[in-house]
Amino acid sequence: MRGLKLRYKIPIYVAGVAVILTILWFIFLIRTVTVEGNTFFSEAEVAEYYQTSFFQKNVLTNLIYDALGFTSDPAYVRESELSYPSFGELHIKLHEKSILAGVKFSRHYIYFDKDGMVLKTTDEKIKDIPYFESDDVTDFTLYRTLSTGRAELLDQMLNLSGRLIYYKIDWDKAKFDTEGHAEIHSGKVTVKLGRRTDYDEVISILPDILKTAKDSGEKGTIDMTNYRAGSTIIFKKDGE
Image (cartoon, rainbow, N blue to C red):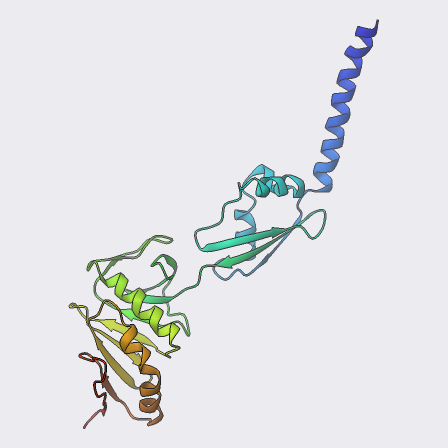
């Protein structure tokens, strides 16, 4: 008789647990997703990415899923933070990788990060982001390292753009010729930098020199191709 009662109780217990779990699932079902820090993709696209798994669609299971390290970030994201402001709400804070500079390739502008990973491509130049012009770019794939025909070109671009940002040089675009000689354009001033593996030495002394040249309001060139410590630097105005 006791066995018979137990046999009836087990399905009742199971049914009870199932009902409780179902209630909890609907109470904590994620109905609202807010996103912070997104610039590459819309809030809806980011929300969809972070809810691809069944377990990511509920606050309780999402919390466990994330705590176990199963949450993956898109390639353009350095790290993310998930929080739950209410029973049915998920908040995603993104720390995206930063665009370092761009490069013009055919009719496209390709924007990359400090490691040379392509983060964004457009048909029109993005305002206020400087870019390179070079005939040695061969191919690109989103979220992959930029491909160049000359092996050292990417390293040169990363080094040069990194130094320009570090020393707060205001530049519009830069060019590399087929031999790897670089020049930057800032307003009406062109600065020839030559071919180098590290541009720190020349860029470190450039801010004051470039400011003086730009303050003149004249169009011209600063030639630092053969610059060595202690060399004399002259701003040559066009027509002189």
